Image (cartoon, rainbow, N blue to C red; front, side):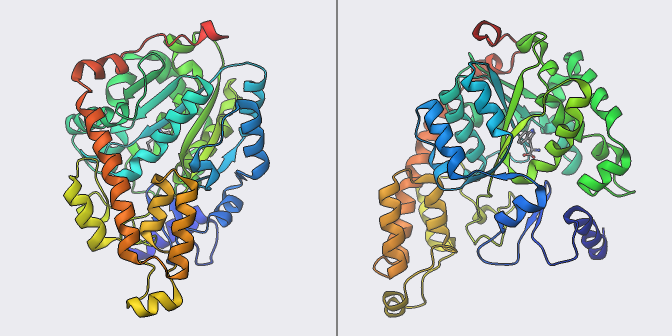
Length: 409
Ligand code: TRP
């Protein structure tokens, strides 16, 4: 595609001629150091803000303090969360659905965010979780061989399971392997495909005339797991509600799903959207699987973590210590602080760091040290958990089976 074509495509998706952030499932770009303007995105996408009132209702109903991702606005937007809370209030079950496009062998820290959140939601609500590995998607978009994409899906599945999910209520599957053995899945894909025109899919995703039809027919594959009848071995004939935690770039898929679901006899899935986890080099840039220095991988050693952060973490501090002490640092653009918001659970400590850094009392090196300590622990724990996930464990999570959904009704 030429630069002009890319521009036209993004304009179609963004519906505007202004210089706006680009947020699509394939590209996320902003022009300022503070990153994407998320409030604007809520307006543009027509979703709702996760506000104080929703969090209070959440806490009142569940008796649990909202996760720090919620308290800090990392999961910041939603669709129909009140419907989910109503169901919970009435003692009716629902299920969680999320996924991952396995494009690299080793996942990085940013990939953990939706799974950490799902684990917590699962514990709070005691509901099943379905994890879709879109190896088909990655094979199509990244031109990876089918066989290799499946291998990546399996490797990533181990990292996902290592986040603490239990096999009694978690089903993980690879599209390329599972769909062919599950007629209900294919049938729902066709039901969805019948409801969406080429014009609509072009408008939603920006596909062009020269895109392979594999891309054009992919979205129903990601939509289908949001309908409970896709998994008869879990839900029998129950039309269960679905809640999808995901990064906001995945919303186009689910806008389409929400439009189609009622037309084929299903409730619209509810959603919780997260912000993006910024690259080490700053919120303007993206983490890239091809540049090792933009992210911390779950396979990195303690030493690599330390070196990457010390060398590459974008600093919101001043050029000299004297200046820094005088003017202070800018937490809004400082990656060490931004990453600590994701991984340092202790609210008081985080606030101490924010105040200290902003006033200039805390130096960039000290903030980095704090982040290094936190992440070395997170990654070491993950590596230990992952080493316990054997091929046999994997098979258990990936086997289509009853997850005890019915008995809880
Ligand atoms: N398309 C997503 C990705 O590339 C993977 C995915 C599939 C997903 N189903 C999902 C993500 C549901 C969130 C929710 O990462």
